[in-house]
Image (tube, rainbow, N blue to C red):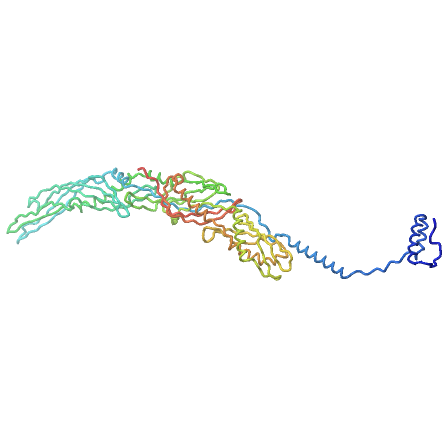
Length: 576
């Protein structure tokens, strides 16, 4: 092998210095393959054989600045994106339901009992005849003194009378104004005897007489403390079939001398005035005895039908447990009567507590009838409370539709130190939280200086309240829950605590009109069913309905439909 590189460095023909460098490189390579250790030594001292590197340039400052800005921009975008993550801006209320149980309402029903006149007639004709007894007396009919210088006649005429009176037919009872009249037919017969000097002078004798009249007792029928019918405050009247005065003495004369006559008559016995005190006393006794014969138990048995605890099952509603209307009687009284053509309508007043509950109430008699005493409180109406319900999915849909429609017309925009902040509500969620409702509003907010919208949820609580129309509920007394510390809260407060709350208050309405109409129909059905009313016939005249108390239960919002019923109630015909 021929070694290259041992000759001189004399430039010859066709010599190029660059060829030298190339040959040196080849030498190094060849020698390295054969004598590796030696070549390393040669390389250590053969510096001129290695070409020099060009000088290094300094860093490009413009490029580095661009990269830094890009990094910062990416960091800001990332940080703004991180800040746009959905957050909760106020504490979420706990989910807690209440029980749908409402305090009972005091309700009044005024049942009436028809007391036929025939029942009063039958009782009156069973009474003892209080007129069947004798009566007698004496009347000085006339006195005469005749003188002609001397006394020719000086004397009197006395009439002694006696009679017997008794009922002469059936007692009748009929309407008289706002009360009744008991008509008692009476006949009498008697004798009038005369005495005294005039009777002797004229040779007058006694005379038999007879006659008849109808004694009337006008009064009112009431229910006494034990709810027994009684005729009260009777006043006497007379209707004469024969003259109230009966002639006992016709005109009679006799001469007494000197051309003078002693004359008397005609003279009538005033039977009417003589019998009036007797009849008045006997009428009071007669009415008292009639009262003792008027049956009491049929009236009390009829009132027992309303003095009952009742529990009426209501038709099942979606999202609600079985519900009952429970009735507990509290007071019973009779405020008066109404005299009608067929009989006397005895009015009663029943005050009861009426309430809706998931618990079936007690049924059966409410105890013995209480004493009939006036009730101080004014009479109310028959108040029936029926529960209505709306499940939360339905409420959520209704409120979401209303809020989105409103915000489409009037978006939420608030001026803040950072500029105008616009808030869009994506969804509203409602659920029970004790005796209030929790409202969660998911939103996104466009904030000046931010690339991404801020997203989050704000929580509120509200008290569902009947609207003025009485047929819908609105969200009232809306309050934000305690705020969670967040630097965006100050910017969002103006929009959420004012405009969002206002939108929820003014444009969140849950309609119950259809349910109220159905409740009225249910009430009419219940009241028209004698099986549900213990045989009491209820004639409904008018029903006014409105929403009342509200209970947020687990599955649904339950609201009370308050029905005030104007109705006449009639107890079954009394079997006297």
